[in-house]
Image (cartoon, rainbow, N blue to C red; front, side, top):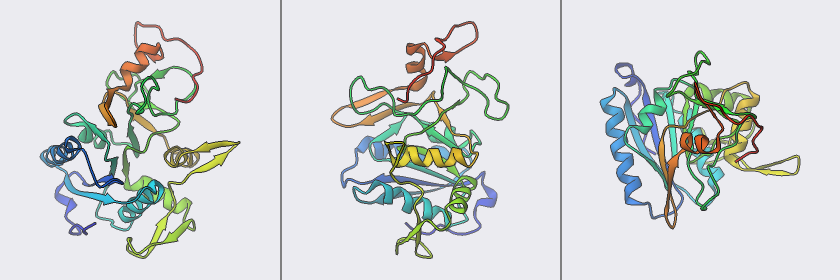
Length: 258
């Protein structure tokens, strides 16, 4: 990753580090094109953007940890957007994530298995789109969740700094980060005999620190594999009857993690 010039974000709304996690040497051209389009869109909206690709290995935990630690060590950046090389959205998706003005928000996408739903861990009860500042209903607002997939995350500097402070001694040596430390914020764990993935464990840790975890359910996202699994999480919730909307009834139940 190339260092961006310091102290250049003052004339901008913020400085976004936009990183594609490329754990396979081949990246779908549609994903590359989308990243370029989103860089242009963010720039037009008044943000300074530094695009990068983390050409890592199959060790997804290390890839995510390295990127988060590189971001942490470069204070010129205000926002970190990480997305996997098999995930893309429609135009304007990344600007929308940045402008929600919350510390941690995810794009939620379908799993790459037909009929398996979306990669998200829900909270008990039905979901409601709200203004994250007021908690009141907002048609195009966010949904609070328990666990987010790591394939499309937008994090502020406050989020990463809070996590690093909480896990300040939980690091391992690496020459890829200024200062030589990579903080192990994303890592698999086993809790109550359940294996927790690195992204869901990051979510758990963030919430234990008192942080709110949000999903933007309005984004149309595509998860590429042998085919593109596409859709909007809000449509999925409506189909299941688990979305609270004025004038409509939701099925009041406690859903399992999806």
